[in-house]
Amino acid sequence: MPKNIQTQIKEEIEEFNRRIKENPNECELYVGRAYSYMLIGEYKKALSDCKICLKLRPKDKNVLMVAELLIKEIKKRL
Image (tube, rainbow, N blue to C red; front, side, top):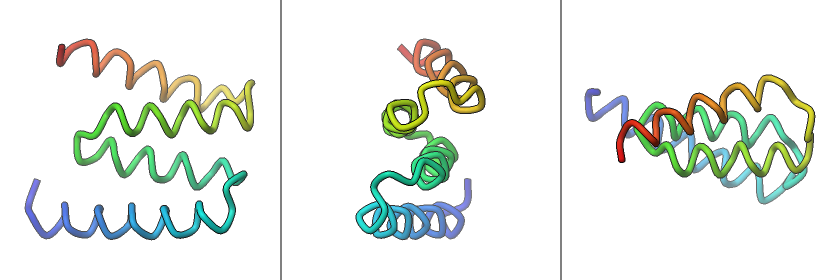
């Protein structure tokens, strides 16, 4: 991935961090940050955000699906 794209994604993560501080119960923010983490290969951080979102919405099938994909990706890299 080109460095300028990685930089842009890291800036997006910082924006999500700021917004999460303001709205810590907003599941969509965690999902957005998880996706950004996934794009730069930070799978454990992405999974952590999915877990937070699942605490907020335990039956969210989309987040469950993303979490399962992340777990598979993490296992592949072990």
